[in-house]
Length: 394
Image (cartoon, rainbow, N blue to C red; front, side):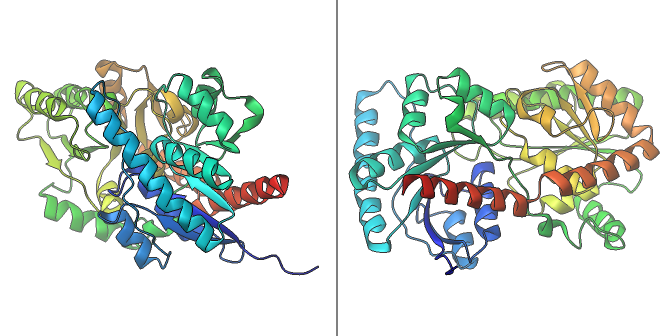
């Protein structure tokens, strides 16, 4: 049987900054088997995603894609639609020049562009759905226009079904994490040294309990619950510290950032909380911490929960969205009711007071992450899906 040529897949991202969706795309690109996929990235020329792809030797084709933002302003809406058509025209030329077999739209905004490219060129596209955001009739339309809607969790798959996408058109491929990123950080014998060094430059004592909350500063992440829970935890563990890591990456939530600042002051947490912006040393910060706390609501997946698991860290999380598919309650972490700081604080306090349970949960979480959430598994499943879709199209 003659060897098959690798499929040529063009990956579209409407965002160049490195949020969770963009980090997941980058790690997928680095894990794809080169004998089965020839990957090309079409991303905004500015931003860290294009640089990372280039460093990973993924061919980058800079096209001024942009995120499609909801607006009632007719002029802004017209400008976005015009930009969409301009980008689609440039990408259509790339499809023809490169002989692309399949388009992979990494988000909803990228799917809108891919839809137009597919209409003009006949090149099929996969819509990678990473959100629980309702798009109204657009969800069903995108589902029909794409050859497949890839859901990153059962929660997203159900969301698509309820929005009108046929079940047979939805394929679940769980998000994965690059386990190699944690090698030498979370493994013995380096782990203890990394923990001590990281706590040293953070100014956290070796015996101070440390809770960490990582995520974008957007209202649905509910970081204010983390602040309230930390204040309650300190009633039982007065020397407990908190670490809040993230930022308003896309500069759309300044009022929410102000709310968080006000809550920190109201709760008297100025000396108990370290606030860090976007970071590249997430593995080290996780190893330095004792418990990851996740407070988000309607979470489509929960990538940071998997990263915590790879770092051997137990999780206390609200039971919402895709997070319940990651955290095995009582085994790899604890789940609490959404929107309630009290139960969250009780769960955190109980784990901080039981180092043996933290270790056993952390070990179970690492095992589960390696078995279910390795990016290499995600890449293999995605490539098999591509091959099936292209074969059916042919």
